[in-house]
Length: 182
Ligand SMILES: Nc1nc2c(ncn2[C@@H]2O[C@H](COP(=O)(O)OP(=O)(O)OP(=O)(O)O)[C@@H](O)[C@H]2O)c(=O)[nH]1
Ligand SMILES: [Mg+2]
Image (cartoon, rainbow, N blue to C red; front, top):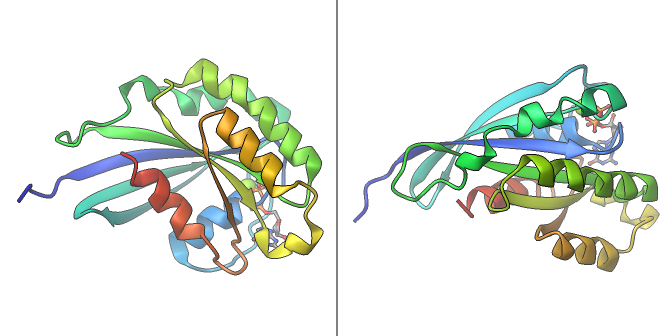
């Protein structure tokens, strides 16, 4: 049987709009609590170790903010992706991206689409990507058709998922899904 290896996996969480729900979503994953955090100044950082197929994977999660000024810093957080993906017998690190929007906001969906060129310019094509519709507990206020989000994700080679930090729905699944594709 293959020995377990420790991996370190950087994840950058991105949105085009403020108040999309990134920080609360990451904090729910890291602490299993729903906590309102206020606007992120600069960039937040969280760590959590999970097990994927008997491999311990330390997730280093970068919580970017969405203001125009700091958007220009995104390439810094996306740097190093040419080293991804990690071969299964390596203990080096890989990289993944969670691109998010708020399912209640057409504007946040359009803004997320504006992030694609920035991601493509700064990341290797092989970097794992997931497109996530946040606040899915508010699906009665949905402003973006699930099919449209799915189609957008497919076009840009991303898996599409929806999650809620409030209820916890799919929060772990998003991170496991990304990490499981190492
Ligand atoms: N109903 C519901 N509301 C949520 C959820 N997640 C976040 N919110 C609301 O959305 C607000 C913004 O969430 P944040 O996580 O701070 O948003 P952000 O994307 O980090 O915003 P910036 O740091 O400004 O870029 C929160 O204060 C909550 O009011 C959720 O899963 N469900
Ligand atoms: Mg934030």
